[in-house]
Length: 299
Image (cartoon, rainbow, N blue to C red; front, side, top):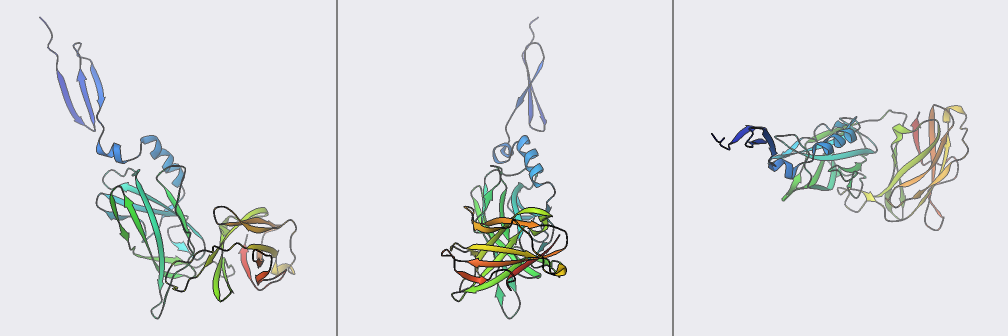
């Protein structure tokens, strides 16, 4: 008696099974909508590794639209005065899988002080991390307190703006200063020290940004288009203002940052005095050696 061919359908996950004339199950993977929209399992593992150690930003992360949730990560759950790296991802809310096709733009921080409102220095772009759906930018709040951070998004064909809830910006230790300002040609510029928490004894690559405040102080302060050079002169105020050798000026790089070398010979409090020069070499702010324009760090 001939065996009859048959097909069984098992609705378990997304797996169908077919049997041949020998009754042996052959798995057939049927793609779901999530497979088209979301990352593969291997990409999910790599994304988790990239974001490991970062925390979701309280009040900014987990904003939802339709079937999607935007998550925002930083070094700490509360941002702080000064430079903060931000990492944006989008998840399919139901499955928690990362969405491949999305972009973010137009980050806009704002502090409402009642009698006035003002913005703060930010990056002028979002950079994609290693071709994964993670976008990086930075923001540097000028002062502690309550801020809002809005941004635009595109998730597949869905576009909109998240105005964001109120987020808390923490103060940094009182003896430290990571943002300083100067005026040149009646325009206010801000010098933002990047990653000050990562500085250590020995020779460090020092990174910073120079931002320019526009006529409307409620709009973000974007990196200045002018090219400067920043001479640095580190001293230890608690040790008779002794300095250190082998420091190199900060010069502008292709990504818009300024980078140089800073040699910190011992632990303690350091003042990094700054001499900001224009493209022709003329000093526009600060000055040589013990200038009144400086960052203060502690290592």
